[in-house]
Length: 140
Image (cartoon, rainbow, N blue to C red):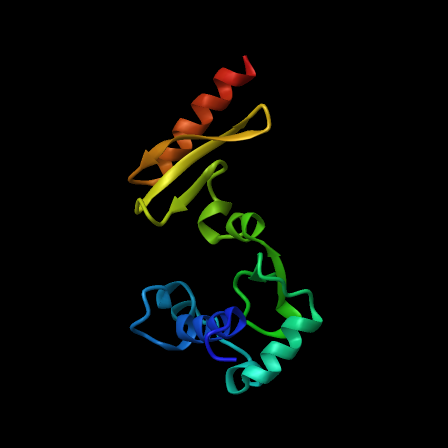
């Protein structure tokens, strides 16, 4: 099953948790996030759990407790949108998320049911200020 999406998810989570050279290691393994022994040692066990727990190609694996490890009791399959809203950097500043392609914080606000970008910023404080200002203008 090498080359399949579940296999890439499995190798990706192991790399983020155990490969100190991985670009995301500090956000995972560097913070103590690991992969349970059952999944670490067996793609078949991970694949079995995935298919029995709602895996679909349009869903992402999500750790329920963002500080917890990849293990059956702490993982679920969610939409990409929900997965992105569960990131650590989204909890402190409302309306702010990290935009990886731009390597910047993006402020966004919902207007008439549509997500609108307010711009890209070097720090989350500036992005949050843009969000708060836009929210105040909309609330008036």
